[in-house]
Amino acid sequence: MGSISNSDPIFTPEMAAKRQAAEEKASRDFRSDVMTVPTTAMMQAIFNATFVDDIYDPVGDPTVKALEARVMELTGKEAALWVMSGTQGNQICLRTHLTQPPHSVLLDHRAHVQCWESGALPVFSQASVSAVHPKNGVHLTLEDVKANMIADDNIHFPPTRVVALENTLSGTYLPLADAQAISEYVRSYPVAEGTPPIAMHLDAARVFDGVAGEGVSLKDYAACFDSLSICLAKGLGAPMGSIICGSKKFIARAKWYRKMFGGGTRQPGMMAAAALQSLNYTIPRLPAVHAMTRRVGEQLASLGYKFALPVQTNMVVLDLEAVDIPGAAFVEYCAKNNVTTFSNGRLVFHHQTSQDAADSLVDAMTRLMEDKKKGVKLVDEATESGCS
Ligand SMILES: *Cc1c(COP(=O)(O)O)cnc(C)c1O
Image 1 (cartoon, helix red, strand yellow):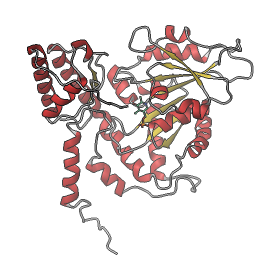
Image 2: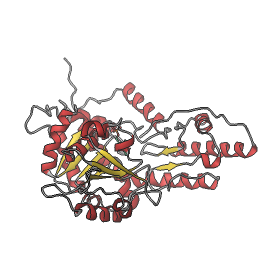
Image 3: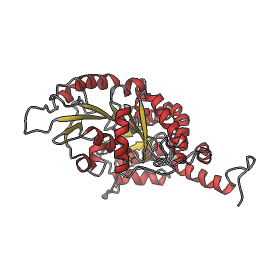
């Protein structure tokens, strides 16, 4: 058996070229910020990880522990737990809060936990939802929450037990001041004797984008919530995984549900090592990603495009219908410039998006708008786009 000595390069030229080609492809893919590839440093960290069984070992794997500790440090939370995906993280958190029906979760009508998780909430937690349309069209406020809380006093209605917020939601942040106002109200909301206070959960899939975009502290933001589920494989660019965090008591209980939902794993240290690396590498790069997004947004606005939502972090959400451009034509024009998009008009930027790709995108959109104005017939066929 051969072994790798300290002086051996870890990557053969073929391996490096394969990774580089994948990164090149990722650099031109605007469908989602999941479309990144691991950096060389992440892959080196994988080689350098620990390999302890995370279920049998009572202490757990040291690299996983280090990742959890880093997230605790960043969020100011007492405890953290590595999970397989953002969906799993959200559903474990909600299940841990929700004990005995009848009960309901108050959330934004577009919430990922409700709309994009295969209907998991009623299956795992037997919960109803109050799906609220924010009055301001962008994010929930205290006023929206107040108007939709379900009290403990009428047997026709399932009482609110969790208020679940999301930051960012389609690239827009829910401002810290609103999160604070909602949190203060919800946590002091009167409940029946013996019932725990109503819990605040944050789908924090892209919370690093949210706090960087608004320019607020993650610790202040996390303080508004009893649980957070943070994706490591979205804008942060790790190959997989999410982290949930909360109090020690909450996380100890959540660990049972992680096992129950199939999230107990054997040697996750390798993936945790890559994720640790992604936190160090990517967080400082987010402002540059947001700046590029903003520039493209401004260029598209000057071409006459309309937006469904404000451009605040790493997404431009176009309203193609407002300019009467079919989604299929949008995809086709972008593809001609070697740029990949979904037909729904959502453009997502990440740390590997290249300036060259951004220029190609704007160039494709320029031609599309010119052709539209000239009356060129644009393709208009049914398209499918599922994304999160
Ligand atoms: C991606 C995403 C999740 C989790 O999705 P997974 O694909 O299960 O990792 C949760 N919430 C939001 C807002 C997301 O964008």
